[in-house]
Amino acid sequence: MEIVISGGKVAPTTDEITTHQAAKARCIANFLPRPELLRDAIIEHNQDDGTTSIRFETTAGPIRILLPIAQGFEFHIIHDSETGPRILGTFRGASLSVRAIAFRISEFLRTRGLK
Image (cartoon, rainbow, N blue to C red; front, side, top):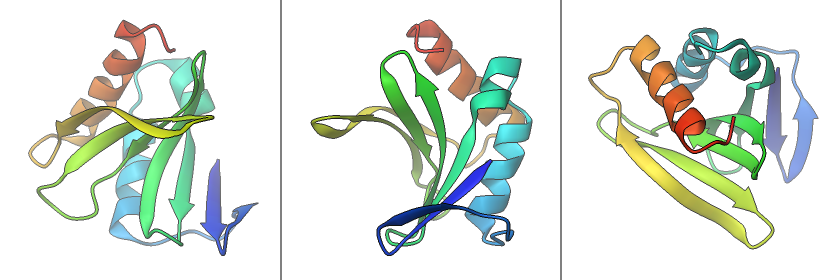
């Protein structure tokens, strides 16, 4: 499922977003190694901030994997809590394949008991 945030409003999308980040997020989500992650992954396009992320509902609340804005930057793992967003971790993924990125996301969530 994909959602778009535009003008502060959240809406499900039926139109395909064609940015490089959106295509990479779809590829990563398709290679998530565990069925519960694949089933629960939501691709979030925040047009207000110009970002794309993969969102998961976890035992600790929503977790977003924020894709890098440009080549060479880091992936950010963000926990959205009542007190605001908090970065839980980062990793570089410029040289990694989408399968390796999906595996790292899965292992990060599994080893911390979030999913």
